[in-house]
Length: 472
Image (cartoon, rainbow, N blue to C red; front, side, top):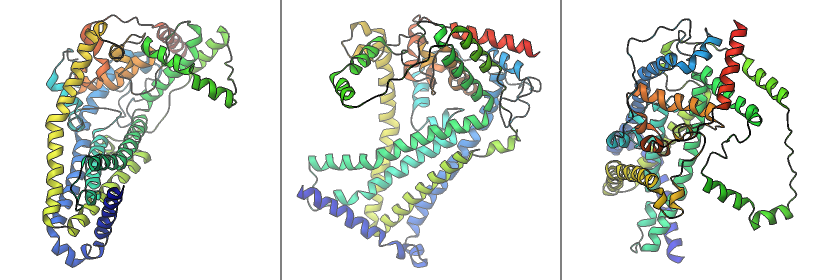
């Protein structure tokens, strides 16, 4: 503990010296004296801005092709018939059934085949930000998040420099403590950033494709209401492997859970049972709701990196934190010798190069191979390895695991699969086995038969057609 406290004091004293340099660095003399560091970190900031805008431009043609693919999809015919003048994309006034003009470029589905090289590129944490099209998470946001994590990690490395620069050499315990401290500072930033990225991405998707988002939520609502009509229908919670479900049930009946139930008073929730006529009336009300009305804009607005208040807040707050990290690195470099500053950048750059070209590709290949081989020979694997590759449920894996939003039945899962996996893959000219989450590719590769329960979907289609014809 004495050695640990000494090292912590080293971190504090080192950062005190770093911040004490602010007055001399941010001056005319400092600008001249530390011109090389100003140019390095200024270049980093400029590259970050350019990469984010390049990512925005890369999404522009693919998003147009994405809209064209959706307009030609048979699944949308019933939707477009009900609201023929409502565009599916807010920045294309003519993306409606009555006004749309198909593109000359025909995007034909790519035959699914497992391509290890393509999968590594599209699943890579770094490469996917430029190579992969996702209507829910734009390239600009993914690129910004990637840059944010890079500069934050470099900031943490410099911030804790005093821990490893003590008089004594670092032992095993010191390295473990330094790893824990680094994780303590880095992981919260990553977790918060991922949460905000997904949240803001969904808000952006809802803003740009209000009709698609409304249709998805309409299907989710329909599933919830219609579920009591079909006994044995599988819900989200039940759509996991039977082994996992057994474990969850045993956990709920554990001794700890019973003790908590005895000590705390919990009011039992009473689920109101509705008769069939009531359910059908609620389903009819859900189907007959009008689709959202919204203002459309010129395609020029699409060139902006974001289109909502939440998006702009995420953009500016991310760049604000990147600016803070760069300013800290500038002060750190000014308060240490040139060799220390160069050493931090070189060591961090070497680590990142190893991660990009070695660690990440190997992790993707090994994980994919494990799931494919594990699923193929799961009967021969011991517990719990045989449970990690189970995909038995009434929603096919390719639909269930490719849905980034909550789901209830195949009605919304298949729709989400079309929006977030199938159509984006067609627009990018790649197959879904390269872009899909790992568990989504198993049954496609092994051609297993999964029992699909489409009773709710059939009811939805039937009622939608009936009320569409009634409106006509």
